Length: 71
Image (cartoon, rainbow, N blue to C red; front, side):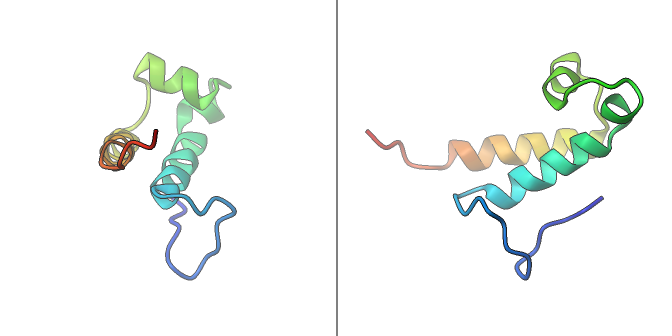
C-alpha cells in the first residue's frame, strides 16, 4: 500500500490530508474497488473493505473529529 510521508508533497495541505490520502489509496487498492468495480464510497457503505482500511477510516474520523469547529 502506498503511504504518504513527509517527503512527498500533497496538493491537499489541510489537516488530516495524509491520512485521507492513505485511506483513499487503501480503498482504491482493495478487492472491492479493483475486482467488484465499486466506488470507494460504496465499499465503505457495504463494509467490504480490508481491516487496514477500516483502521485508516477510524484514524481519519478521529483526526477530523479533533479539529476545532470554525464558524
